[in-house]
Image (cartoon, rainbow over all chains, first blue to last red; front, side, top):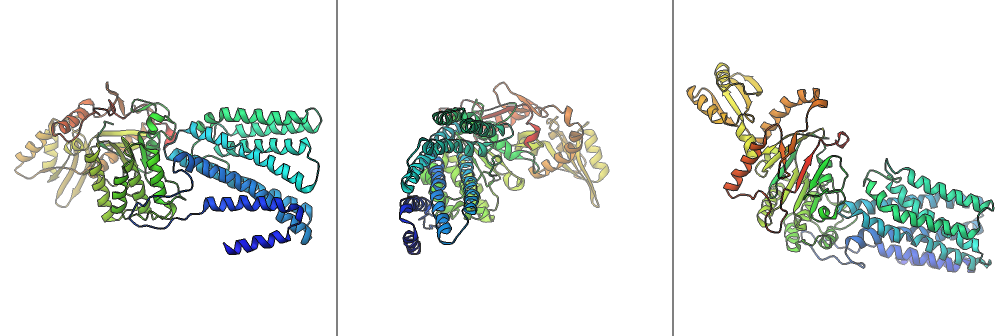
Length: 254
Length: 342
């Protein structure tokens, strides 16, 4: 723990002053994840000692909310940390910015697969515990809103620290993208023989909206509206998709 | 499957036992007409709340310590018995602070069993629950199951390959092969109606011919004589005749009941080839009873009913749930299991 703190202080001192707030955000999110995952359990053999937890020991909290919130925090907390590290490397280690971009994309996609696995695990454990799939779907749809909220916060922060004027595009595009990400992550993980086309259909719709916006056929406000409509549609149909899924044997991360 | 009994689900690897248990637990979709507590089980809260599936093929959350699994289990099941959980944790010497994934195979089996017993669910589905348990713990397992039935009568369905050990525990057996139910009935009846005849070959043949046209499941010629296993399930009234006829040989032929393992082995050999050849035309091995239970078509309704009546007479088990419990059998199934289940 002390080593990590020292490392954080060194990194902080090396970070350019205008990126320090983002660094701080990454540190807070990363620390939060570490605290959530910390297992303070001590071993007691042959004795059912009462379990203590920071969160209520209920299946909904422990199997759906905690792992899924942690997963989104890992992705959206890790992304700015990665941006800062790569920024430092570009600035001080003369890393090609194109290379840094490719590296970021590769790591981000890996991160997406990691959190997909977490969603799959959450679903598998919930069903294995005798949970009703509709409950999992409802909770997952609500928790998915973390993704656009994080994108919104990070977009605003990025605009503030870079000193750029906050434009509508800087808010709308990441939020719409984060909504689509939240849809695809869940659906790709639940995809089975009958529902493999569902995430592809959403991606197709998302790409269509982006193309229409990029070619000037769609105002930027409609991009956000389309994202919200797609997400609501996803939330409504998720229980049916969850009923089709086979826990443990379906999903893109499997 | 009648309530308040222990049913053994047996069959070769890949027959679909685990899949069937997951279907009964409401975790997998099924085709055909299958009901548990009178409801279709798939993703049905009425079933999910009253059934528990345990075994290392139905794993508990891998990254959780055992005591967290038990704590969350107590929030999951309103019928949870914390004292029972603690008692069984001690009995199986489970390290409650260790993560489920770090437990040995036997400890995982024990953790699953503790969870299932403490849940208080009316339907306990155990998928090879003894895997990895050492001899002493296996003995503790059988003791635990017996205690559970005395403590809180419930329906237990257990997939097993350990017929010799399980025989003492099971009330009925269901033999599943390639998604088809090929044998179902009380263990006692199987043992009483599948008999072993040993003695000089000609004397054994004479006894069998006097009994009429009874199927001979297995024949083995040894230096000391012949050993034949005959199947009286279609003609159970001839069982007494078998003993009488053997007695008339002056003790040359000995008749004895076989163990469950021997019976199943003999039936496997005899049913395997013809059934495989006739697979597309073989009818479903069971039919609906009027009360919604499952009746093995091959053995006929009376076989099942008589076996159960015997238990009621001895006061060992009730036939169907009473009081606030389910007014009927917990599980019934009509229609062959889909082929892709196995």
